[in-house]
Length: 202
Ligand code: ITT
Image (cartoon, rainbow, N blue to C red; front, side, top):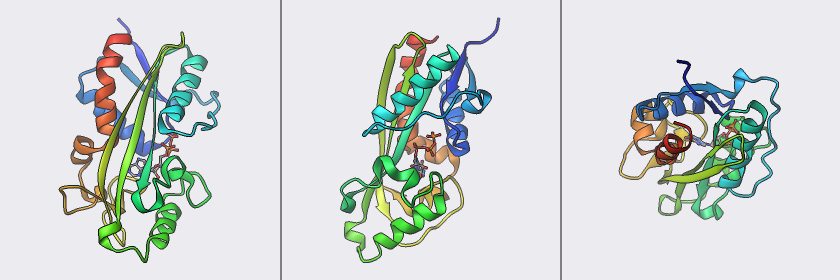
């Protein structure tokens, strides 16, 4: 019997690796496929103003275009002293979508005068499931921490080298993928989505 396909609506390789691990750990007997398997499906414009809205936009677009159930996440870094920015603009904070290094360096420069007592931040993630018939669900997860003054570590992606998760003395980029998934915003959101996927997809 062929396994039910579930599309992961992302082209971010770092995320695909994380999502595969999280969903496989949950024991889902599904074939997980990245959006790259469907190159003709155009990227959706992230016009939402919340993580949940953008995650749903991405999941619906792929589910509609492929006729298959699709999951998507939208995520970002929310900095207390910046009133939650970069937030939904995290991937393009320095101007170019996905330029992780420029984004991180701009943020560090903006916070250069802010001392440790005021460097609180959290990663946030909304994870959405959409079915071709329009059924939708969305759940959220967070990872609180503080921002370092300089990057440390080489694992992960994005702002990982500067976010030190609460209760840890290393950055996310110094955690192994399994250690990060266990406490991460994306790990929490996707683990919360697993029972929903089991119920609606199988
Ligand atoms: P897709 O839309 O294709 O999924 P993307 O990179 O554009 O990929 P988002 O719109 O969700 O993804 O933007 C998330 C950005 O937030 C990402 O580029 C990073 O800069 C940051 N980010 C999110 N989760 C992160 C994590 O676990 N570690 C480090 N940075 C993260």
